[in-house]
Image (cartoon, rainbow, N blue to C red; front, side, top):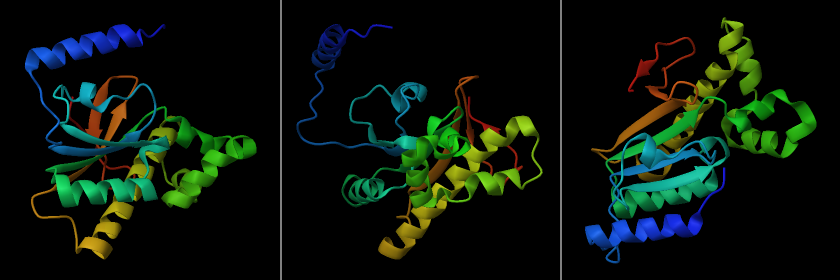
Length: 194
C-alpha cells in the first residue's frame, strides 16, 4: 500500500485551516496514552478522537512503561493534567511474539525482560489456559505488569495517581476491531467497549 505523504499533509492542512485550530498556545490533552508502535494501532482513530492535541502519545514496542514513558507521563501529569492515562496493548503484538522465538530476536526479548516481562511466557504457560488463548493472555498479563509498574512509580514519586485521573488498561483485538478492559487476573472476564 503506497502512502501519499504530500497529499495527506495537504488534507491535514486544509482541515486545520478550516477549523481555525490554533495549537500555538500549547496543548491540552484529555488523555495520555502509552501504546505499541505497531502500525496497525492508531489511538485517535480507534477512539474517534479527531481533535489535534487531544491525546498525549507515548509509543514504543509493546507499549511498555520504559524510562522514556516515565519521563513523558511525569511531564503530562504535572503540566498537561490529562483526565485519563491509558495503556493500550494489542493482540498479534510482535514484541510479545518475540518471547516465543528464543534467541532470534534477543534485542526485543532483552528489552521486554528489562521492563517487567521477565518470566512472562513461563508464568502464562503455567496457568490453566486453553492453548489457543495463551498468546492473548500473555498480552493481558504483560499489560497488567505495565500498569503495576506505572502505579508503583506514581506511588514512589508522586504519592499516587493525581485525584481525578482515571488509569485504564485496554486491549485492542486486531482481528475483530474490538477493545476491552484488561481483566484483573489471568482467566478474568473481558469487558468489551466496542
